[in-house]
Amino acid sequence: MLVSDFYAAYDCYGGYHQRCWAHLLRDISDLVKVYPEDEQLREWADAVGKLYHKGKLYTGLETPGRKLEARRYLEREATLLCEAGLNNKDSPQHTLCKRIEKYLGELFVWEEGVPSDNNGAERDLRQLVVTRKISGGTRSAEGTQTKMALSTLYTTWAARGLDPFQACRQLLISPQV
Image (cartoon, rainbow, N blue to C red; front, side, top):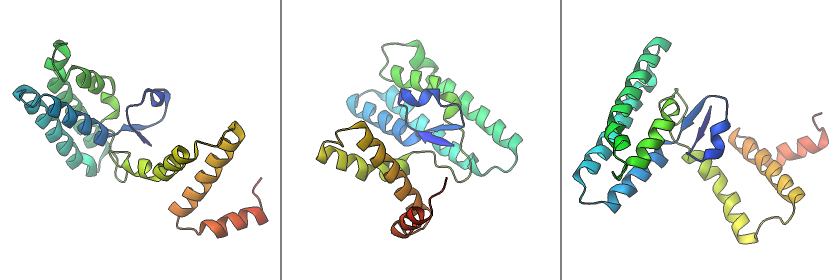
């Protein structure tokens, strides 16, 4: 299952997809900071946060029928929460309500062991991004491809608890075809 933010490049992914709640809740929190006097916005933001926490309680449901029932309930609740914001283009939450509406089918996919945010993936990429910013990149398509391939290998080996040096050595000694 892919867990991603709301970047449009992920829209074409055809597999199971969970959108990142940390990004959504952070954007909602940022909006409340921009409109501190808007009581309706604050109530809406609180209600979305409560719906998120309620949804997390449903993650452990054991039967597929119960999970589907819970997911449909959560999606209906989210739709109701966004109804006013969608109907009023001048409301501060209009854009976020459109986002929730667009990605509704990918907000409550939660499965046991799959996070509702992509924070872990972003942390895994952080060093690569920082290095790229400091160095200015690899300066060639081939260099970028090599760096990405090696980064993927080393990160996967580390995630599996393997010694990246030994795994790389083993791969060089007896390459897989």
